Image (cartoon, rainbow, N blue to C red; front, side, top):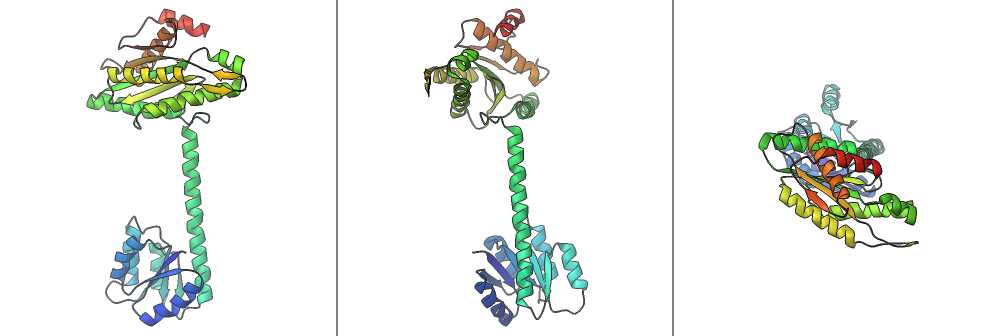
Length: 316
């Protein structure tokens, strides 16, 4: 049941409207002055307000102005009720953001139609806002794992790197890659491979903090940006993720699937020029972990030799 706030300093006017509004399944709340309306509206959050223009004290125009300047009530549609013969007050009300107006004596069928129009407009606006938020969410997520996609990850991580540079707070990066993932797809099928990637993402989510930024960068490669986390803390987190993945079992039509991950961990240093430099160092450490036997974590602030890591990248 939608609430309607009726604001009028004449009780008989309110009662005449109340019967018709309640017959239309509205919950009617009332205010006898502009001041009372301004106190009640933010608390009651009505779906719509019927506001008389001519009232003693704070009149309808001043009340409308203050309703529209309050973030809580700004989007509530207001229909002005006028007994004046001139149009100046009505024009001013519409310019200030009133949705519509009706004249006294009120013809309820006209008022009801204008209320329906206002409520439909508000509903359409809410649907559009929800759709836009959903589109924005989808544009930043990897469809399979529900982690940040590459573009979103870099946008957020570069912001954290800027804060690291400005405030000299710890910032660590973890690079993860599922071992021998092609064999998983070949032996168990791509659907099972997708489930393994989802399991990896869920494992990371369950162990990291809400402030950590998790992304699937592509294929079976994931990254974690961990603000205010020293290298030692990131290494502990990475080892927990590695152990959890090693112990995970995924049941498939082709049997029980197990997988492992190799992980490289580093932290931003004052000599790093940008976030890409930190991520590249973690990436090289990841491939050093693979070159060292896979299913392991390697943490370092030093850039490993690129020759062996690049050679292994070409093999995998």
